[in-house]
Length: 66
Image 1 (cartoon, helix red, strand yellow):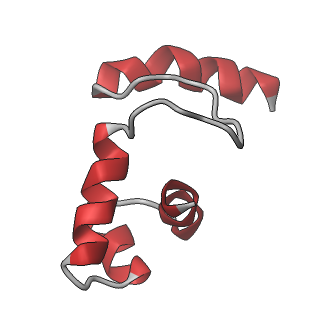
Image 2 (image 1 turned 120 degrees about the vertical axis):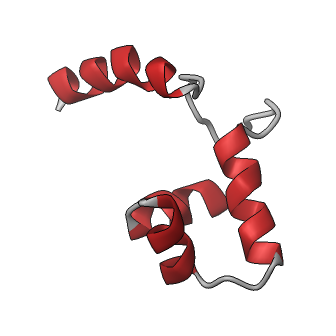
Image 3 (image 1 turned 90 degrees about the vertical axis):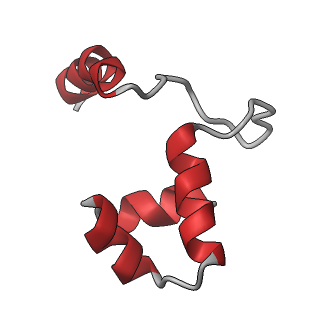
């Protein structure tokens, strides 16, 4: 698992996303991806519709909404 996490840490910035740790008391501004998911929820899309549109897994969408 740690090898996968290290690879992700190296490759995620190539997609334009920021790598950061999440904690229960995170005070950082939302990422662009998080804002996009929230906007799609506001437009009335369901989680499965968001997953399909953004090519994400159900867990990823749920994680961003938490």
